[in-house]
Length: 317
Ligand code: CP
View 1 (tube, helix red, strand yellow):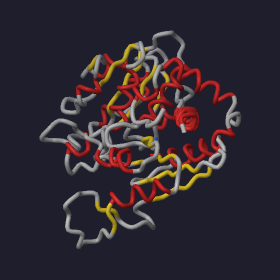
View 2 (spheres, rainbow, N blue to C red; view 1 turned 90 degrees about the vertical axis):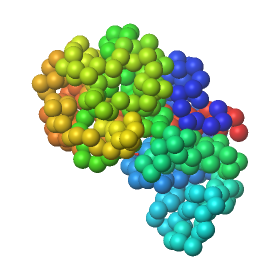
View 3 (cartoon, protein in one colour; view 1 turned 45 degrees about the vertical axis):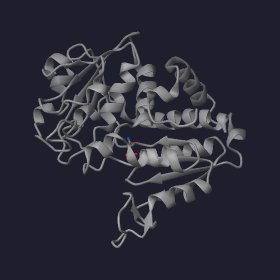
View 4 (cartoon, rainbow, N blue to C red; view 1 turned 30 degrees about the horizontal axis):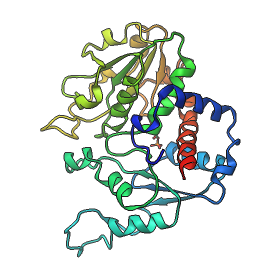
């Protein structure tokens, strides 16, 4: 593997799951692979899980790890070409990227959608500049349109907890006070569509995702119908994708909060969320604290997904 930005980059999904299982059972078996190799993690946006789990994955593989928060301590970066740099950004990303590349062997990048220009977001301008100009393998730690390390961890978790070969997995929109990117639901849909699960997406009118990511999923606007007989409820907020409302919060309808009433419609479904989660907006205290909530093992599997991807990258160096 050279770069990792989407489900296609992982190759055969069953093989990837087998590799992940081996890594989970043998976390320190590949320390020789990372010896004298440097992992650089670059954050344009905040993080708890991705920051810690990817560092841990690198350390498990014997790598040295450098973490840089672009907005805290680094020079502010200009990203547009042709800009007269007479403002508050003293460095251009086109110099910064190859410099960062010269200090490491593998680069992870977190760069969210900025909601200023939909085309820039959906063309993954920042992530692709790292791929083009760093000269090093690049992996996404959540970009504008996808969060593949999260989705891989979600898939690993579903495989661990599923009670039937072909579970019903429901991605449900839930309310949130701020505009959030579509990266997690896009990516989750992309990975679920790569399985043979029964996959349903439910959301209020106006929150339709890009058709490219919805793929073969069933879109069900009636949330009660969607929840019925579900094996997994995966909750997430996202802002509107469609124009002219791209990046906007259209409503905060609390009837979409995941609660015990709707969970009772399921087949004793497990509750999942990528975290961080706003309690009693996205999900009630009762549901997230219930035995059916698997958000903690889901987050723990972020080390496994990151280590599986990093190992594949190291094998190609
Ligand atoms: N799920 C996830 O990516 O969490 P962080 O934003 O804390 O990294």
